[in-house]
Length: 473
Image (tube, rainbow, N blue to C red; front, side, top):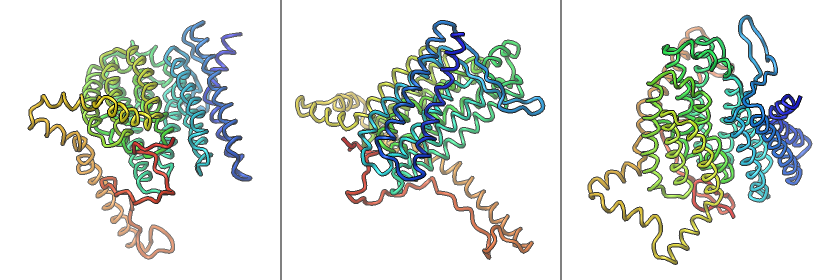
């Protein structure tokens, strides 16, 4: 009886934040709800989510891993969409950690975003993000994990574009959206591959059937697809250029998304799919190479970043790269401990970015030397030629994004425009147009992600607290 109650309580962890977001959305129908009401609804929902996570911890400590099946969402022929939750040490630890981080963020943001025009919108998106993260870590199948994965992605994009009255946040959000959507194809293909390979996407069944399917090519394909999805969500080489741009959002969202939770979702996917990754040495080698390259590039870029938040963002990507290496080498417990401790540290650093800058200035005034000065002194031991070359490469972020834009983005955009013109010509031959009321086919207008539009000059009334060391007190 008690295991069933604990399982039901744990399964409600993603429900409370989603329910609170829906309640706030309904409160907006007659008019804008007060900040106090929004804060209370959010706080109650997050506390309930934390209690549900505590139920999961008690369940795992007392009964071990539990595969909690709620039935099927729907069935068609031989395929069924199962509603299943997996409660083990990994999901219990991550669920409790997520609940604590979101609760802290809610408490911080009530004061930080006081009188902000987007106050209600911020909390609605944060609640949907919390629901997505809880569903992601508790999902017992690849399909449910994909749903939580998409919840996290869309809420991330909308919070990057939180200050939509400015051009740069919108452009940064488009970059994040494109990267997410392209790399999410890997998770979708991985789920489809599991169906064809093992006949199921329920993690417990997948792990039980793997010993009978070792050494197969399908294992390599599924593993590489999952690694590609993790690379996009965790900002790894060569698709990690979106992470510094994501600092355009509010500091609170930068802390919870790109310092602690969202950026580590890819690592969680690797930990959850660890038995699949073990099927192929090539997959593990790819993890090690990608992680090492990201760690080196991001660490060097962090040293030359012009603002505090971008420096922390690059440092985050560097540490996540080391987690990829740990997963590739099979040190999964170490990777989980590294994930939680690093996420806690980066969350704290993001929230106190302004204080960190002030502390460095006070240290320099008192001692005449800072950690940055000592790091620069160590670089003086390198010969001037190589030092200048490394500095230029780090300053340009090793030209990864221009290379992707030149060899991938632009050809795809040119091909899409060519196909659009061909479609318009074919429709014109038949006396039709793509849209009624127009005399000519409409061109495919997509944002040019290869160009960085300079930031407009802002009036003092428009706040720009993201992407710069000046943060709001």
